[in-house]
Image 1 (tube, rainbow, N blue to C red):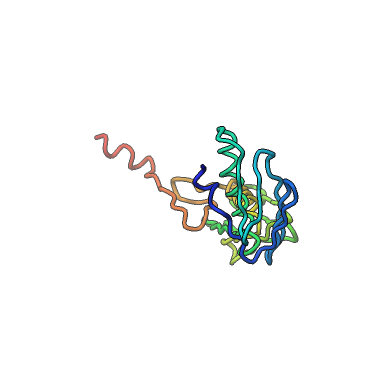
Image 2: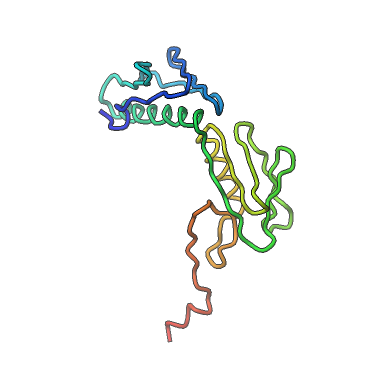
Length: 182
């Protein structure tokens, strides 16, 4: 048995609907749905979701743990939600929100405009902190990664967009590179 897959998923405050292979989860933060692979069976028992598989083949084992993890993430998302925070570091670097777009001025000739997906909310704290939140863990992580990709932190001065708490290892410049060779 998969160690992750055999654990039941507690439903808690979320409202779960299981119809054949379609699972819909609804809570205070939103609604999410998942179509489960035909090899996997999901049942609702005693306020928990139980995921089972028919055999011990490699694909069945992988799908067993994956399905259980996806369901747990869905329930966590609709009850508590997910949040990623990013910091912008650099002189003159800033972010602003224009309608449903996020505009980043991060050292390029023109500002970079990113369209905010409908299932994700973006909040700005000052000009250099961005908070991405939503019920769908994958959507929140994906949009946060798109924002970071615009200007990754560079290793010499540390300028760029980074996740909150991310440590960027700063390299010494070329002035220090030859000092140890003499």
